[in-house]
Image 1 (cartoon, one colour):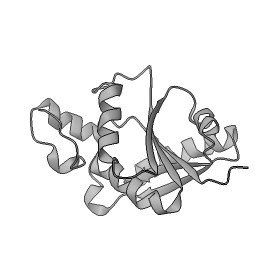
Image 2: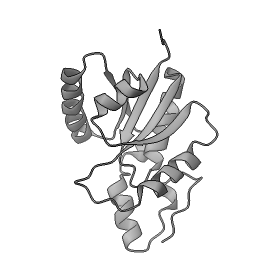
Image 3: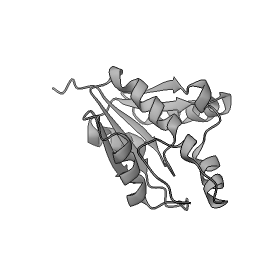
Image 4: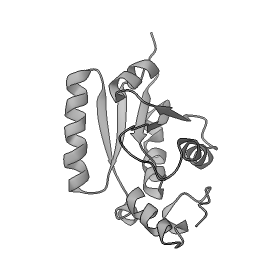
Length: 156
């Protein structure tokens, strides 16, 4: 029997932000392994390619052997089963995030009662950061360095 505590941190990470990085690193002591999982949403047009996002996340967490990076295109609960993960990790910036994520967690619980969702609050300085805002700033050619992990470079 596998007693390894594995968590999935799902998202589009288009691109990864300092908020994402902070949530994963603060959750790391709770788990044996965290899989940062890029969900491939066929209905959503990505700003950056899946390959580019995988590379950036790998660079961000390259010093942490307990963190893996993967892409998936199935239901999250199916991906959790495939990876033998019993936990879903989510970051919350505000009450709007909470309402949205709570509903997803409840649906996931209905689909698979063995999977538990854990919420971690973002740090106050990361609360306003979102991938959408970062993409908007990039589209106007401005510097996003202060909003993304220090190990990655995004060309404006």
